Image: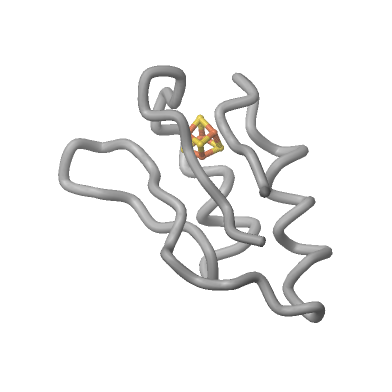
Length: 62
Ligand code: SF4
């Protein structure tokens, strides 16, 4: 499983990066992106916290 951000929806609030910097980062366009990393078991909780913290539901984990 990996984390993905829909850039059409992201508003650049940085919540996901604050919740889980291991899996998300901000790009030069001011929007977030999911890192191309397989989500390890120990990161799944913070990945879900980031998903829950996104105000516009731009994050998917699949
Ligand atoms: S929490 Fe959602 S809206 Fe905020 S930067 Fe991350 S993906 Fe974008």
